[in-house]
Image 1 (cartoon, rainbow, N blue to C red):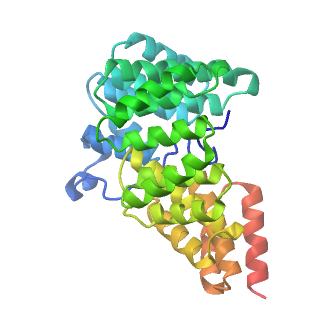
Image 2: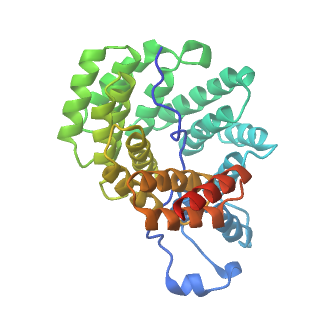
Image 3: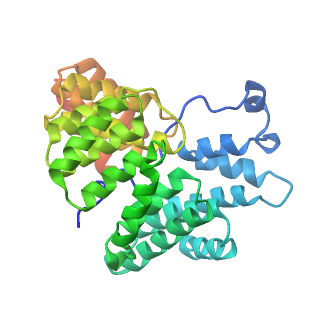
Amino acid sequence: MMKLIHGVKLVFFTVSLTNICMSESAIATPQSKLVASQQTLEQLYYQRDYQSIKEILNALNRPLKIDEQLLMLAIKVQRDEDDADDALESLTNEHQNNAKVQYWAGNLWQIVAKNSSMFSKMSIYSHYVKAMTKAAKLAPQNARYQMEAAKAYGQPSIMGGDSDKQAPIVAKLLQGSSQFAHIAQMDLLQNTQKESEAIHYATGIAQQYSNNVEIVERAAQLLWTFGDKDKAGEFFYQACMLPAPIKEPYLKWSAACWYSVLFSDNGELSLEQGITAGKKLLAQSSVKDNEYLESLELYAQLLVKARQTANAINAYNDLLASATNKSMKRKAKEALKKLSK
């Protein structure tokens, strides 16, 4: 069975957001006095600003609410801390009837699986399927949860999936007007390997919903899976050029920008398109973590290919100053030496 998505950056891919809703007065206040809404905290989470979240929540003089506990747990999982999977299992079991807890748990179990050995992945993915499908049962009117449950059921049976349960959820979604119905339908067409129908559907729906980041990005993924890399690249770039959204849609926007840079480096998109996408992606980043540095390194390579020497030097100097990885630093030094000749 084919994978639903390519896995380079998309497993709960946490990326940068702008316009975090924190007033100037709040920013000027000592960290211990900061008060942030759950919306702001979750935006910081997608921005990968884990340290700010921990400082804000640790400063609260009260027990953490369940949504706040979820954020602290998610940070443990993202950082691959030793007890993260035990803590995740404990919180999931403690809140069996909380749809949001189960939904977040489903996403977090995918990260745990990604960081686990091949021997453990299969059983861990079954936790993902169980949590995500339970979230959908607890919140039957939540279209996003239904879409994710259908995707979970579409996993191989050895990972806890059940393909017989995927199609009915998709059919029910298609009876409504939710955008998630179209994403779920593309998942189903890909899983059932209906190539010609899938390509036709993805191409049409991406044009119909040309301003919807999640639909256009999913169409690009599907076309890529079936080998049409040129059209996939066009759709990735189209999604990247849309305004950066927030929360889950931002994950797909940032992935679309990353793939635009990658496809440009591989020749499916022009250097100009890749540079534009890379610049837009990096402009959203406020945390210079590994994901930022990987994007910056690839962006710098495109600048060299485009013979934008001054910009390439600036990019590699930024990489050299920010990177902690010895190999990445060495490559930056070597590139700068060549560019200075």
